[in-house]
Image 1 (cartoon, protein in one colour):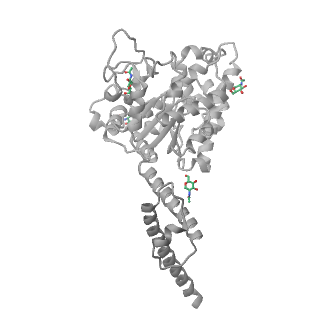
Image 2 (tube, rainbow, N blue to C red; image 1 turned 180 degrees about the vertical axis):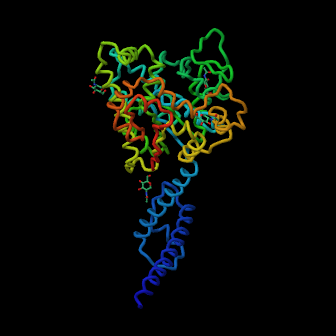
Length: 431
Ligand SMILES: *[C@@H]1O[C@H](CO)[C@@H](O)[C@H](O)[C@H]1NC(C)=O
Ligand SMILES: *[C@@H]1O[C@H](CO)[C@@H](O)[C@H](O)[C@H]1NC(C)=O
Ligand SMILES: *[C@@H]1O[C@H](CO)[C@@H](O)[C@H](O)[C@H]1NC(C)=O
Ligand SMILES: *[C@@H]1O[C@H](CO)[C@@H](O)[C@H](O)[C@H]1NC(C)=O
């Protein structure tokens, strides 16, 4: 019975003692701060004129005190960092998954956002070999290092990949500059220079060549930094970014039904997919095995990244979110809210207005049917353009990917084109 009471009492006494010691130490610390200059080493003599009620040996105090002081300093430094913490978001996707659309949610966020659209385009272009591909190892490293710098508002490594090489940090050819509101705002807009051709010029205002020093200065002032990229193959390669104490990064991986992606690619890059089409329409030549291998390789990369993310290894804890494009298209406002909450970035009225305008989620706002797409309807359109034979090839090559993301297999042409059967399973990817 008694021992029950003893424990809390001993604990309390210990607390009181610790508290007293703390106060003395901090008083000593205050005095020391007044007396001690950086050049004066801590000496017993310093204590001689302090009236301390406790008796303790000086060597112990000085050591404990120094540790305590350092801890306090470390703590307040840490607090400072927490207060000023910036949000960094990497939107990871592959082509034809709606990443420009989703990136726009962030691009529209407002004055406190620094958004970059596909900066790695330059890196990929520079590292493309004569064979048309890239050395995956070399490019993965370059992508990672460039992203890391960009999140810290440093454009120097990216500059080295821009062709022609910027002069004095000025460039006329930053890929799709106009797709980043932040690169066209007043503070980053230098005067137009007559006779200089700008490949990617700002639409919201007339600007001269991009001064990357100005871009960097603007970036430093923003609380939120978001980069969209379709070029990173493996999430695992970005681990150093998650572990960089200067960054507070979140990864949002955007995925889409691989059958829909292929259907979209067949339209967007028709020439490249001519052989697929001919094969599907009953041509005599068999389907190129290398093409199927490439398709499988892409699906596997996406799935492996998602598996790493969903497994939540310590370095990724609370830093990874998986989003299906189909869910964004069907429930744009809900999914946007989730993504912004996850990112720790406020969802501003501008973002909401942009989503309403571009998805027609609300008839009240958009009034009559306009030229805007009904995104919910768009999301299933591919089912009527993709030949069943090709859907089967994708299902064979990308089976595990379809399964992981909750996309239903079709077993017949009839099922593929039956609108009453949804191919999207309800799935929550818990993180
Ligand atoms: C305080 O931080 C420094 C460097 O960041 C570290 O070397 C030191 O061990 C920390 N001290 C304590 C007591 O945590
Ligand atoms: C790819 O790049 C890495 C690192 O730069 C190099 O070690 C490797 O030999 C390259 N591989 C090929 C196939 O060129
Ligand atoms: C680019 O911007 C920086 C910072 O504002 C400025 O110092 C520099 O003169 C600018 N360069 C040119 C060529 O205008
Ligand atoms: C968009 O299309 C879907 C599917 O056809 C339909 O259910 C929905 O009502 C449409 N939304 C609007 C706002 O027209």
